[in-house]
Length: 213
Image (cartoon, one colour):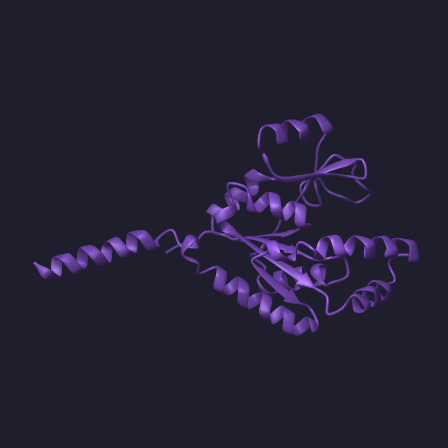
């Protein structure tokens, strides 16, 4: 019985470990596809269309949104970003899991989409606000001003934890990774992900009725 793929949504405030866990999840199962977003911003040096992003004109992007071709979309710092629906739908029908690293707004749009039946949403919480700030600082990627902005945004992200299927407190990365794998493994066995079950049960029913004759 072939299964349907999962639309895996992974969200968290910046610094809670989302990118690291997404990478570990794909290392664990390379068949998991990372969704390639569409954007109206210009390609940066070295970026490849179709691999890093699907680069689109603003007119083409807005047309795709109006035609219902985006699972989710947002306007960020003067540019549009979104997730094309077609490749995701085809992957799910073909039994491939698709991983999304999105915020709560993107997650909400996906869980309200036509693919809602196949979504698995997971939110990562930090063990404390102090630890969240320490992790941002230890990365050494951002200055104090950027870190302050990320910290101010973090509570808005955290406040939406209740709309997710699963919530994990990422205190220990290895332990959280193990729980994440368990959630994905179990979710692959959901009734909705096994389209062959109905025919199998019908076969059992026929076999049962024939045995009574």
